[in-house]
Image (cartoon, rainbow, N blue to C red; front, side, top):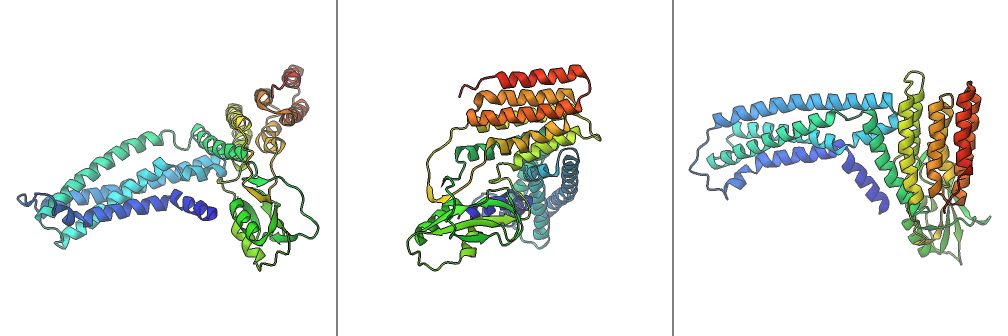
Length: 420
C-alpha cells in the first residue's frame, strides 16, 4: 500500500497530470453551460453568437502562444539549472507547483476556448447558455491575467542558484528529518542473519528507491519469519545483490513466493528519487558546491552559500528527536551514521575547495557549528571530517598565512566541547 501511495504521489507531481486536470475542467466548463443556464434567469437576454465567437477565438490563439512561450521558458530554465548547478536538481524544478499551475491554467483556458468555438459553430448553446458561456469566458480571462502576473513574477527567480538551493534544502530537510526521527523506518536494529537464512536478490540493477517496512512486517507475522534488510534507499545494487535475508521461525510451513514478496516491498529503479533517500539531497547540494568550484565557474561564494545550506540541513537532522518506537519488530533494518552523511555532504567541497582558503575555513566553520548539537559518536565523526578537510587544505594551499588560518579553524573545532 505504501508503495502504491508513493507512485500515486509521483503521478500527481507530474506536469501532465495537472495540465490534464485543468484541460478537463475547461472542457467541462464549456460543455456544461447549458445545464447552468437552467438555474439562471437569463432567458430574456439574447447574446448573439457573433459577440461570443471573437472573444473565444482571441482567447484560444493567445493561450496557444502563451503556453508555447511558457513551456519554452520552463525548458530553458531547467537546462540552465542543470548546467549551472546539477542535473539532480532539475527533478525538483520540474515539480514546481507555481510553474505547473501556470501552464495548466493556460492549457485549460485554451481547451475551454476551443470547445466553446466548436460548440458555438454547431448551435450547441441556446440564448441562456450563451450568457453562461460569456460569463465563464470573463472568469477565465480574469484567472488567466492573474496567473500571468504571478507567472511573470515567478520567472524572475525560477531556476536561479538561490532558488535551486532553497528547493533542494526544503526537500532534503524534510526527508532527512523524517529519517532522523525513524532511522530504521520503524524496524528493529540489525542483529545479523543466521547462516541458514534464505537470501533474496534484487533481480535487476539500479538504485533502491523505497523500502516498505510495514508490508515486510505483515508478511513476516503471517508466515512466522524474521526479515533482515540488507539495503537502504539510495544504495546501488546489481541483479544478484542480496537485498533481504529471511529467517524462518518455527516450522514456517506457509508457501510463499520469495521473490515476489521482496520486489513488492523493496523498489529498485534506474534513478534515485527523493521520497525515502536521505542521502540524495546531500549529494545534490555537494554537487552544486563542486560545480561552483569548478574552473569553468570559479565561484567560491556559491560554494560558501551551499555550505550554509548544508549546515541548516544537517543541524535539522542532528536536532530531530528520535522516536524509539519499534513498529516492525520482525524486520531488522540497518542505519546510517553521521560519518556517511558527511562524506556525501562535506567531503566533495573539502576536496574541490581545498586550494581556496575561504572555502577551507568555511568547511571547518560549518563542522564546528554542528558540534554543539552532536552526541559523542557524532562529534567524533565531525572531528574526523574536520581533520580530513584540514589535511586536504594544507596539501593544496601554498601560502603559509593561509595554512595557518586553516590550522587555527581546525584547532578551534578540536578543542570545542559537546554539550550532549
